[in-house]
Length: 332
Length: 246
Image 1 (tube, each protein chain N blue to C red):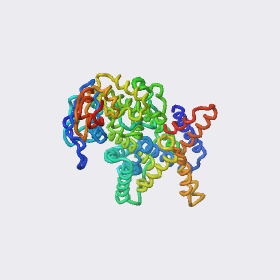
Image 2 (image 1 turned 120 degrees about the vertical axis):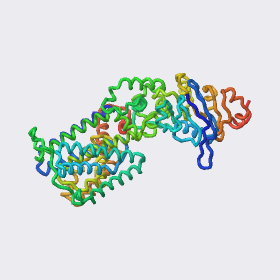
Image 3 (image 1 turned 30 degrees about the vertical axis):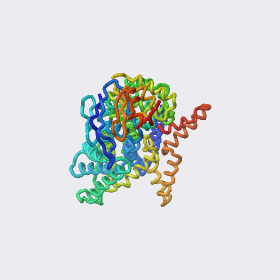
Image 4 (image 1 turned 180 degrees about the vertical axis):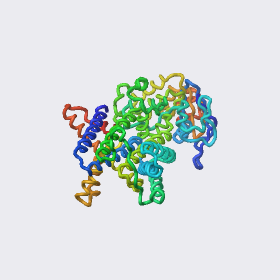
C-alpha cells in the first residue's frame, strides 16, 4: 500500500516534469494546448474526487465548470469587477449552487444519480443557451485575465499563462492529496466502498455526499474561471453534457480514484485530439481504441497499467514472493 | 438499555411482526430464536432502523428513537453486525476499523489532519483487532481474508463505536466449529456494560451463551424466558424444536 502511494507520487512528479519540459519546447500553439491541458486536468481532478473516490458519477459536472466561467465573465465584462475578486466570487457562487444541487441529487443512488445530474446539467445548458443577456448560443467575449503585473508577471503572455496554470495544477494536486490523506478522505473512500455500512456505523451519509459535491463543484467552478481567462471567449458548449462525458473519459483513461490519473488522461486526450485530428478525420475512432486498451483486463486506466507493470518488475527482482500481492494492490 | 414496545409491521397483507415487546437491560445477552419466516430479521431491521414499524415504540437508554434513521440510532449507541458480511472490501483490516473509528468518534469532517498521525485511532484499532482475533491480519486486504476472519471483522466493525446496545445477526453463520468456538468466546468476553441481542440458528450456542431467550413464531412472541425455561417448555418443543424431545 505504501509502495503504491509513493509510486503514484513519483508518477505525479514525472507528469509535472513532462509538462514543464514540453513547456520549454512549446511554440505559441503549444502553449495554448498546455494551458488547455492544465485547466482540464484541474476539472478532471475535481470530478475524480466525486466519481473516483466517493463513487458518485456525475454527468452534470460541466455545468458547474460553465457556471464558474459565465459567472466570471459576468462579474468582469458586465459588472467591471477586478478579475481576482471575480475568480473568488465565481468559485464561491458555483460552490453554493453545487451545495444546493448536491443536497437534492444525493437523495438517489447509482444510475438515478447519473441521470439526475445529467438532467440538471442540461437545464443549466439550456438556460445559458436561451438567455440573450448571456449571449445565448453566440457566447460571450471580452473577458480579461488576472493582472499580476504588480509582481512582474504578465499573464497575457501565452507562455507565462501556461506555466502559471501548470504550477497551479501542481499546487492543487498537493492540496487534494493532503485532503485525501485526512479522516475526511477516508470517509469518501468508505462511502464509495459501502455507503450502507457507513450509515449503519452512524455516518449521516447524505450530508457527507453533499459536502464533497459542493467542494468538487467549487473546484470545477474555479477551473471554469481559468477557462474563461484562457480563451477570453466562452460559449454554452462549456456546460454541455458531452463536456462532462469527455472529462469523465479523461478520468477513466488515466485511472479514476488515483488523482494523478485524471491529469494524465487530460493530457493524453487533449494531445490525441490535436495531434490525431491533423493526421486523420477519424481521430475519435482512434481515441476509442486507446480507451478500450486502457480499460482492458480490468486495469484502472493508464495508472492501473503502469502499476501492474511496476509490480511485475519489482516482483521479478524479489524471488518467489506471494503471487496474489498485486491483486490486493490493484484493489487498493 | 434497549426497549421495544408492541411493535407491529405489515408488508402488504402479510403481518410479519405482531405486537413484539422486548426489554434488554445492560449486561444481558438476549437471543431471538424461531423457525425461518418467524420474523427475526424483520424485527432486527425494525430495531436497527432499516424499517419503520407501523405501530409501537423503540427506546435506547430511555430515549424514543422510533423515528430515527439508522445512522442516528447508531450515534445513540446502537451498533449492529450483519448476517451477510458487509465490509469495505477494497481496504485492509486496518482501513476498515479506522474508517469505523472516524465515523464512531465523529471526526470525519477533519479534512486537514493526517490520518496516519492519529495515534489514538490506531491504538483503538489495534485493541479491537486483538479482541476479535485479527491482530496478526491488520495489514491484510479484506478480500483475501478467509470467510471466518471476515466474519470476525464484521463483529469488529460493530464493536468499534463502543456501543451500548449490540445487535448481532447470526454471528457464527457459515463458520467452522473452531471459528464458532472463538466467536462464542468473544461474545462471552464482551464487557458486561453492554446489552447484546443476537439472532441465532445454532441451538447449542443459544442455550449455553444467552441469559434470556425470546422465541418468535409467525411474528409473535411464543414465549420468553431463561434457557432452562425455554428448553423445558412444551409449546417451544412442539413448534420449534421438532416435537417432544428426550
